Amino acid sequence: MEEQQQARVVAYGVDTLVVNAFYPGYNGKPLKRELDEQLALQLDEWKQQAQATHEEYATSWVFNGSVLHMCPNGGGRGQWPWMLKSRDLTLYVSRGKWNGAATIRLSSEYLWSSPSLLKAIIAVQVLVDGIFGDEMCLQLSEVHLCADIAGWSDIDTLDRHQNFVSRSRKRAKYAEPDWGYGGSVREYSYGLQATGFDFSRGSAISATIYDKTREIEQSGKLWFEDVWAAFGRWAYREQVYRVEIRWKREALHELRQEVEGMEVFHGIEDVYELPDRLPLLWAYGVGVPGAADDDELGGWLRCVRVGEGVRRSRWPVHPVWEVVQGAFSEGVQLPEHFGKVVRKRWEDRNIDKGIEAVMGYLTSLAAWARDDLPDEGIDLSVVLHWLAMKGEKYLERVERDFAEEVQRKRLRFGTSGEREAIA
Image 1 (cartoon, one colour):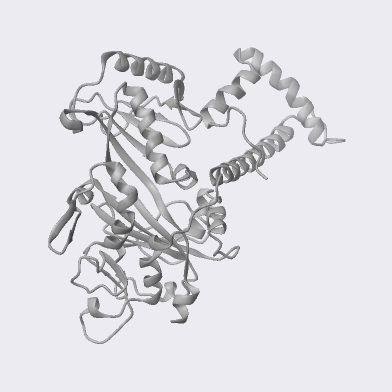
Image 2 (image 1 turned 180 degrees about the vertical axis):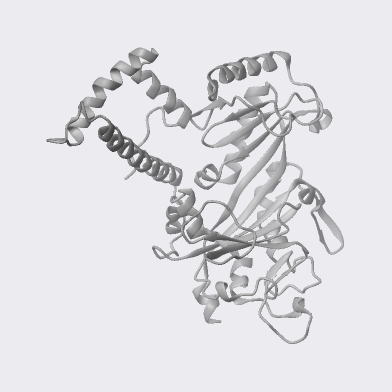
């Protein structure tokens, strides 16, 4: 069991959460009804402003200290005419005739930095109640549960078809080029490095296993290193693989649990039930240690070692998979104020990328402006002084104020207002 001792959970939790909002009906049940006329007019006005400038327009709505911005376009195939975004969520609003009033997708950054899943749900409740002027019903639409595993030493040697047993018949692989091309490739090819594989992608329940270390380098989510370090089990630069189980509305609606022949619950409708159901959802996805293959807690997906016989579902569970199965029973809590740490790391990364871009533009400008900036004595301070004069003339020509532009973008990026210092 050496592998099981080396492999360990360095983080686990909810990485994606999608919630539907409905008007309350009889006995608090969700009710489909058309959107309030005044609210629809306000949304239309904001959208027209966004379309006039071809960029997101700052509204009067605020979530977690960040202003929601109306997008020039809607969402979906016309069922969401209004789409609003902040750094923490995307809000889709419907006219309400054929579906719910709204759908809210919370960002990974917000979910990981929130003090608890319940507090994140309550914050959404406060937002939608204020928008729609009623105590809205929140229905669970989609949730992604994940466990990040360090020390999985033999994962590159596992056969994706032989060592994984799934109740799914659809299975796919993807790889990415060594040089970091952002797109996914569905099959292995010459010169590509395998980084993960999917099971039943796009179905009501699906799974993905991939190299999270590589993914955060490409996506810029380096704050995940702070998450792993906060759990106290990750060595700096150590490779981490993510196991993620994705539940959609259809599967969540059919989920059920029985104890000694008695039904405990059937389906997860109310999003407030979710925090208490996380361990069970994870168990249904990956199984529990010692569960039989025909047991409903044997797992929708399992990693096994080659054993005797042709029936792979009877092969022994891989020791590392037992670590995966126990992830949501860990009971590890993130430190208080961890959300500020995540936001600071994200902002630092954006500042670094911004400086990189500015320096690239400045050197190009200096190369083009040979008449104004001769070779002799040129340095950064000289170029910045030249830019300040040229920039003021440009702002006068386009009738813009630099300070107002900064404030507008701070609202857009969610960086306005005072921020507590991070030690």
